[in-house]
Length: 212
Image 1: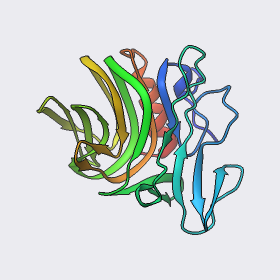
Image 2: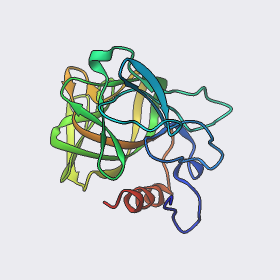
Image 3: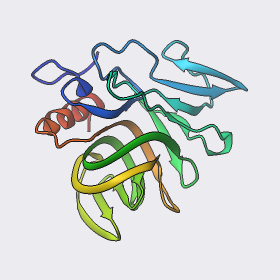
């Protein structure tokens, strides 16, 4: 069953996301497409249309924002050697091991809010990279860096970050920032070009769904 907060609205319905990804559920009420595309045994399939059986690798995570004013921005990786492995432990995650990453074709900048459900092994490893701006996470700490300046706070791996006065970035990566690569898991990610007064509700929704 999909977990919901008090207003019974899904995470991407109470925000205006630039991109909205989940490997496990729809996060916009009107979304009817697949959650991700994976490669297995030389073929590609969409989930939940076909359930993975054995080792599989993520080719694409579909953008669920369904915003008529902004083009869809799927997170993807065409290079098979760089596709994160699909992990399952009660729910699906993209598993990164210092080599894999996903690309996002979108322009993000100015004021942004990033909400994420992830489990990193070390706070030095970036789960999201936007040019000189990066977010690194472990199960206990969160580090946000911009132009070489970093701020570290406590986290359980499910977090919300707000930053302003950023430049516009087109080179957006999941699992990579510059030459640094992520080691850990990622299950859900929402990026918005605005501050969110409802950010805590989305975060609580994620924590409830993923039992953080």
